[in-house]
Image 1: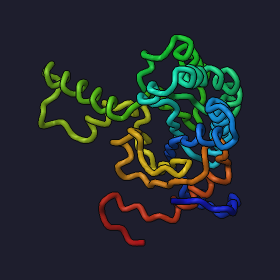
Image 2: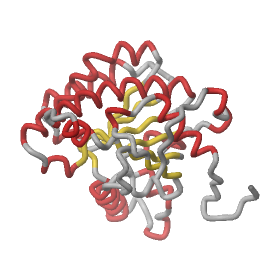
Image 3: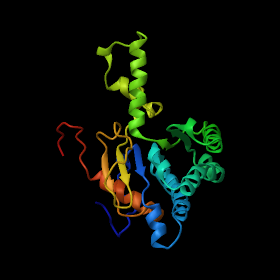
Length: 253
């Protein structure tokens, strides 16, 4: 568990060791609201503002991909009013912040079962992707109606179809073939996060990027997402920079 009271200045981070891909499980919106005797949707509303702040911060630090777990396939089981609000957040976010994203050269990418979302949400997603298509800075990658189990099952089906159609031999199936069939394939060499952050103190993956985080560094921050700040992100990156990544092998410290 990671939580510090002191903030870090930029010069304390090694600019040559900024994680290229950071993935965040944005947790704690509901509990943040409950502590303040507010409806859960108030936490989600504040969380949207934090997305804006952290996106700009990550971009300024030199992060190349920021993946945010926005709506999981399991979130459909929440109360209907909350689900409706959550599915309306992408439209609110993109309508409000796309000009800022373009100004900061941030490109929007969305992965998940997008076709199963309401039309208004799909349209907002597609418009944001189109409006930022010429940006070549950081990729803001939203996992929307996403679940890793579904992603892996879908990948297995794609690979099976290739084998069935005679376009792929079973013996040729390897890590690369699997990764090319996952929803992160368009991120290419940046598909796998270097750093996974989960806020609010919970320590589990919740069906998020199970294949991709095989060798990621995990940092669990007690801060609830609506309270997460630029300084929290820097602290998590500082923690990452003090780790020694060996990818299953041995490496001199």
